[in-house]
Structures are given as C-alpha cells and as structure tokens.
Image (cartoon, rainbow over all chains, first blue to last red; front, side, top):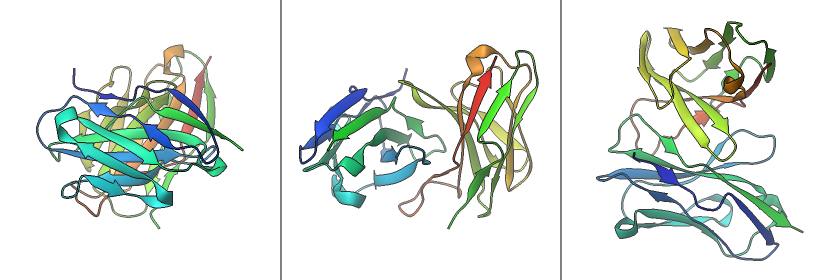
Length: 113
Length: 115
C-alpha cells in the first residue's frame, strides 16, 4: 500500500544539537510534501511545504527540508534545536495534486534544556 | 485568521451509543476533512467532503459516516460507538485544490473516550 513513513517515533536531544527527522513516501508521480508540527496542547500547524522548484525548502523557526526525488524522501532538519521545539512532527504527502493528504506516523521530539 | 471549531474538546461515551462530532469553519472553504490521530499511527483520513452533500471515503471509513448539509459544517457520526474508536478526532478545512498558497487548517481536536 502507498504510505508515508517516519522511522523515528521518539527523538530526545539536548539544546543546540542538530536535528534530522526522516520521512519517506511510496507514491510515484508528482507529489506535494509537507511538514506539520503540533506543540503540546496546540493544534497542528504547517511548518513548511514543497510543491516544485528548489528542493531545499526553508520554513518557519529555522527549519528546512530537502526533497530528494530519487530517494522518495523529504527529511526535516534544524541545525540547532531549542527547548521550545519540543513537539510532535508529522510529514504529509499529497499525491498528484489530488484532494488526499496522507500523514506519517509522527515523531515526538523532546529537547532537554 | 481561519477558524476551524470543533464543538467538544473532550467527550466520554458508552459502547453502542450514537456519537456526533461537529466541526464548523468560517472561511467558506469547499473541502473539509475528518482525521483520527493515534500514537504511532499519525493522522488517518476517515472521510472528506469537497462540497455540500458530497463526501468521499478516506483510508479508514468503517464504523463512521458523515454529513455535510451546509458548507461551513461537517459532522462525523459514529452510529454505534466501540472501544476501538477511542481516539483524538481532528477536523480540517481548505479551499479547493492544493496550490502553493494553500494549506490545511486544523481544529483543536476532540478527544473521544468510549467506555
């Protein structure tokens, strides 16, 4: 079945450490790619998105993600995390510009002060 | 700012009860969605609607139905609640079609517990 995989379910980092969260998808063809974040007690918010063009996408709060088509991946990165980045992060894929948005299982990030 | 409002933040129901989860959006969006969020499984699409009275099944529609009588309101119905439907339910909306300027707007969620 077509799917979106986030391999790390839980990540614990110290402040100032670098972050990379993996996301792989199995859809062929054109895809639109998203990362959403859910801070504790808050609703889901869009972090960044890729539709076309430069495969390195910059989002809010210093996050970026790189689309590597040959690897079917869209990994999220941040060079130096802060305690306030503690949240759950979801990768999502919109295949072929249709109506469906499929989410990965999420990665819970805890940043220790 | 777009507002997606879910009527209840927490709900506790008994097995076999009929449950209604309501969602209202104030931005005249055509598309509305119901997801359930479970630890380790992420968000899974239950149903979506692309217009009034129009609906399509998502990935896990079994045990659920939906109603969209008005553009701003999208209801999720559990005809006979079961314990495996205990979950966080998220409503979302957006305008028609994905484009570089569009995104999905989420409600705060309804945590449903079925005892």
